[in-house]
Length: 387
View (cartoon, rainbow, N blue to C red):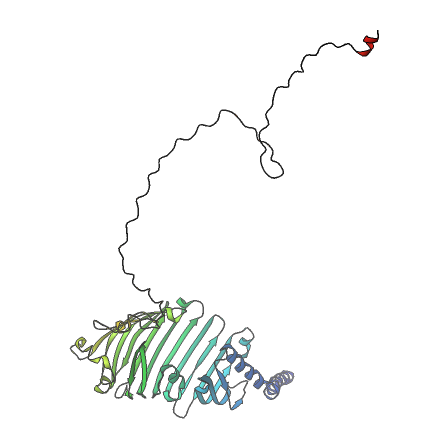
């Protein structure tokens, strides 16, 4: 019994000192820095990651202080994502097979988000819970929306994405935003048509709601509501997914309304006044390709204001100047041709003769009958004369 206790204590002590050795001497920090460098390389140099301090851990999560993701805009460095403190727990053994499995907790002074992420060459999974996270600290929204936004984000995102099989993508998005406001901004819904908006209050007494469900190559917009008071919007519909965003198609409908402050900045408000419904809102329908959608406000085709295209318009070759018809003399009638009868083939046969050295065919050779020698008289020879 004593030997069993001793062996047990030795095993426990060996495991303890093994992990202590790993904790003290294992090069976790270079490995983590290498992983961050790989993430930067996979982005093609678009993003750069900076960390003030790394506290690696083998049992507990690795702690990053002042974690920031940078990008470059017009030659200037811009921080698009930043956390005062980010804790990441990496599963090291799946890394040997090229699969990343990690959990994370990102926090700021006002809120936090936590979740799990799994990534490989063919599949990515994301499960995130968001609690009172300030939108003002998500600078990436300003990059893509073109305006600064303030508000408090709550909700969840659960996605299972396949790189080469869009039809297998699944997931749910359920988000709510409290006290949403936007700074003054300008949008260009179509070439040559700019809209300048003042600062807006998009959610005051109620929350902005976004609920979407993704399955079988479709993204169902179950509810997208902006309560206002400056802009009110209620949409439902569907997006057909595609590997190329420009080939994605939409079929979304609903209604919208706006306050007098926005109406003064919305020049087509007068044109669409006849489309107003009984409750004071305007019907809205968006269909077609996302690169060139068709936008209908009631029966008013907003897309037609840009010549039928809301996307980038390709330059067309100039048409040639119109030709003025001139009076010309009619062409002469075609001459009648009389077919001549074919000559009969000769009844004699000509033998092919070889050509001379100049390539010319020699004249035909006429074979004549040999002439008989003329008759001769018998003349005595000299020998006969002597006799």
